[in-house]
Picture (cartoon, rainbow, N blue to C red):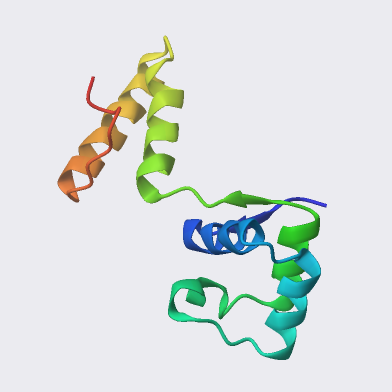
Length: 108
């Protein structure tokens, strides 16, 4: 099975609760039975029990931000010797600038 994709906020809540001493079983139990969270843990409120269980027992990855996704694509294309792919990279950079997205690492 593949890892579950979580938002950064969801991953932070899970990690914080586990570090505080909650067991995986307690997290699942509380999530299914009450589903009530204090304000700082609200990122789990809308998560399905299945997704929480898979994240805890199989593993998870943190969803990339838009900036991270753009940088990933930019780096993949800019390093090519093929002019077509370098042109794609330049287009990605221009599109980010047009919509006002600042992507650290893209403007070397």
